Image (cartoon, rainbow, N blue to C red):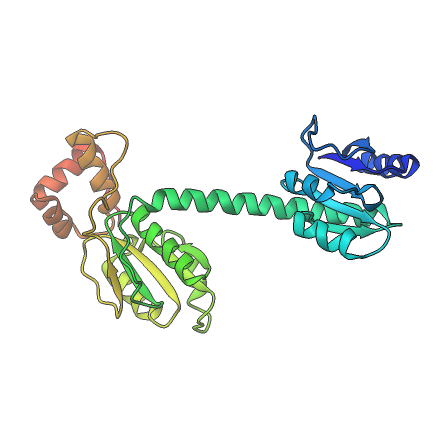
Length: 295
């Protein structure tokens, strides 16, 4: 990190800089509070003894930096006004360099977290526009989100979390980790978002939903299959809810992909019916494409 030290006591400034350099920081020293800095700094340390008539303007102009006031006493001018202008904190002279480093690293971490949160919020706002999510939300967990794409279900779930100001733990039914959840006593917290209900076979799905109804779960189902559950949010008919890949598959590749994905989920008779073909045709295509029947 690049640090600017604004201090009129040269020896003190050099002492602070030396210790910060030993800690791994890059330091620059000045005794002038210049509103037009030549370099970009991550941290600015300002001595209250150098503050003139324009220090509040300087702080406002550089509030994107981590500004820490180095003060000899606490007052409105040394603490309250600088913090209102945009300074992050203050430290009383004399101070241990470890305490200063702790403050710098604390605000650096906070700044990084805020940057990440803003990034993920911007991303979510961007993708959320692709789904006309029904509002207001009519259910509290447990409920099932029935959708034509995992992405749409995820968008609905995340918008629900933001609207309700809640947080999820994430699980998928593709893995066995979820089984550990069901061994614990039902609780209202934490709320679980669990995906891929369509991966379970019919009886497994029925058994799971029966148990899940006792837990604070939001469950996604990417399927047109009928299910029985007390609360179901069906967004499968919302326009633009279908997820289309970047490439168009040939009929052959499409058939192969669909049979591979779903043949372990449904019995042959039901899968053939969904694909609009006979059981014999399904068997022939499985043989043609070299797809082994999952048991």
